[in-house]
Image (cartoon, rainbow, N blue to C red):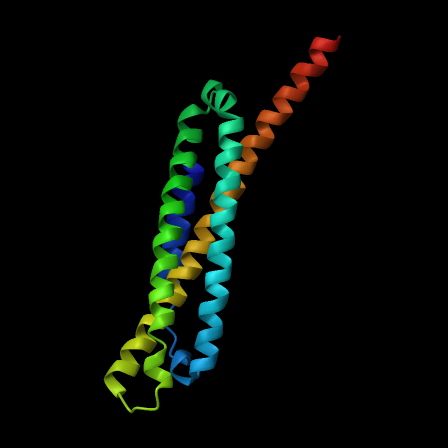
Length: 162
């Protein structure tokens, strides 16, 4: 529980220190398109990883429930489920953002719409960074839980052989 809380607080502090950069203004439409494609690739891969993590949790459900750290385990598992939903919403926002890229590429001078698009792009840069930090932290915590379970099982098997 403390590690999840620390992770959330750490990421909030990271987000406070990351200032909104203005370099997006100098990016052309092609570079922003590349950002969007990279984000979509990372988030779609994360979707596949979520299915793996769900299977991993199902495989070790009994051990996770029996563990002395049940409340911590439950909190991390709940956070992973919330992060999966957040991933889906972020992926949809990026798809919409990608479809709106036409505003910059249509050759029509629309300064307000173009600035609005760039502002959304800046926002997505921060949201994707924050998501990936949170996601990596949660994966690390889950793998640590599973590693602990596997060590205990191995010790139990070794003791049973004696």
